[in-house]
Image 1 (tube, rainbow, N blue to C red):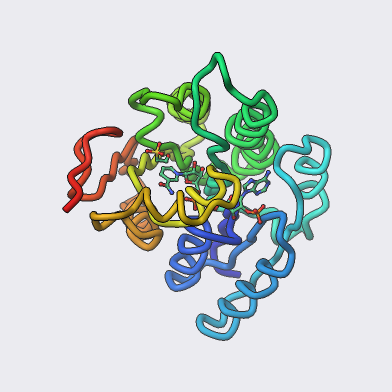
Image 2 (image 1 turned 90 degrees about the horizontal axis):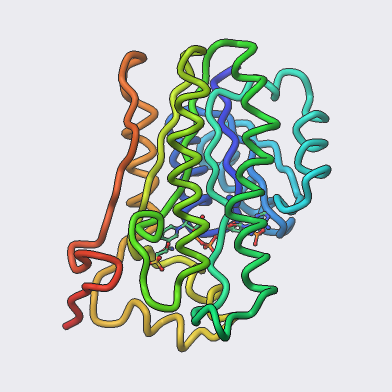
Length: 252
Ligand code: NDP
Ligand code: 8X3
């Protein structure tokens, strides 16, 4: 069987583009997400275009017992996961701490930090047993800087940055590569989700500049997974050319 990659949050945006890219590189893919119709669509697309095998897992990464069970119950051959892409995540809302919506905070913390931890806890022992594997964590420029009205989202992505470094320390003796990609603005469903479905507000985020596209991040994943065995890319920060920092953006 070909190499196996598991991509969390593969029903949209970066995760979907990464799953498709990895299939084009020859991986069989496990895709996860809460929207089962999307999982089935993407599975069909990959099977038809790339003739790769796809296994779908429909669950919420915030649900600890479900996340662990989904991996435990994988058929034996699908447990040989060579690559885990921890991508599922979101920003919910944009506002100050003093006025923040605590439900939004919990959703971000539970998905971006705890969900990533559950998936890594479930899958890393399988890699350790085989003494091989690679983990790519999708962080953000928000994990390198803090911007106004983004304290909680930025905290979750700073946590991803720290977890990426910590995991690398824990895994090094087993030969497991651990990397992070930290994108700036990528035009996906991210802003629509952040603004709770307000598409006009979301579109305004990308007005007057060429943002990154999900495929640009998939290209970075391709670079990471095609390095020789002795090379690990620790960390990659990728921005649109029109963006210098989280807040310095040139719009024309
Ligand atoms: P999208 O909203 O387009 O995609 C998010 C994906 O995450 C979806 O597949 C969604 O699937 C999944 N997801 C969200 N919550 C859960 C959950 N509780 N359980 C399972 N899956 C979940 O956004 P992006 O593709 O842009 O975001 C992907 C990652 O990239 C995130 O971690 C985000 O923080 C990060 N990022 C995004 C940037 C951007 O500008 N777009 C920049 C920097 C980082 P479903 O809804 O079906 O469950
Ligand atoms: C998403 C990009 O700039 O909203 O992580 O933090 S930003």
